[in-house]
Image (cartoon, rainbow, N blue to C red; front, top):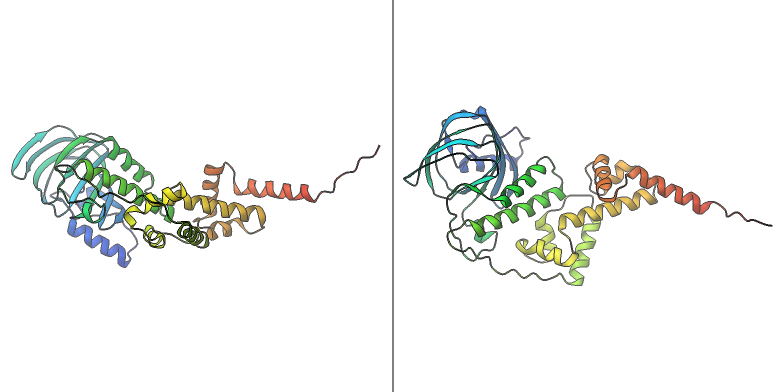
Length: 329
């Protein structure tokens, strides 16, 4: 669970400063514990919702109190809590350990004051502003999340683990993957942890018209060298960002992130085969962060390195130019 907005050092920009200020104002828990004993890192900010990965040093006892202005989801990735007792909305509680894989949900406006002892912890913490399910996920009406402590939810846990695997990957394709994962995680949470059934509005899962699909393909192919965002692609596709991923998959048979990777690899492979351009330049011109990024992706997805691809192409070129031998009897 997030106890403070203390973060690992990051380069300061107007956006990061604004995010830090928002995290400070929305920190869901206050504590008597020294900040130097833990740290957290924001992995994603999407429509005023935030996802953090947090690490905590062992503590024999720590007191936490709050009245959240946001919904909070905590997913235990490593370690556990041996003691958890106190009051929530004036009612006392006491129970045993939190374990790896368990989740806790702290609803907006819940008043809490409790003590906890824990080992070394690593958690994934998500903050959702009010009306998030209605405004961003398309639910028919906002239903409060229910308080849950140390519940088992394998889906949330494994989705959080996928986020951690993407923790240090920051190009646009990984950003698209993170947004997709976050939306899926949020849909699961608000569909399964609310008071009463939370019903999403029906989504029109249509395909793009042939003209619109061709425009989107041409746009992506012409801009492979730079970052893409879901917002700009959804705008070009002429559909709401909430339904963009489904519409895109229905049209192209793949997610936006996977499609962009495939197009970049296709362009890079063509340039490697058919030109003598420097491979580092090819990598940067087709949207890869470096030659090693291109090499790793090409080997993983197509089982070949840029060097091997160029060598094969050169051999094929020489064979085509070699004169045929005429055998006479």
